[in-house]
Image: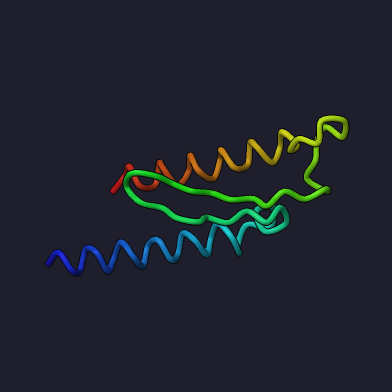
Length: 83
């Protein structure tokens, strides 16, 4: 019975990955990827690009990109907490 739970969990993670990376146009546009997810941690990645810069003098990420990273990580954490 434990193997079925693991298989169900793995299938859920695959669906979640696909949804976050491929089915949400904004995540796809900024290049957001969900690197890993577990009950203990979520790892989200966005490669730095010039078109994501919010402050041209400091060369820092735009606040909207940062907020999106937090939104995805928080959503993934919330999804995991329900399990």
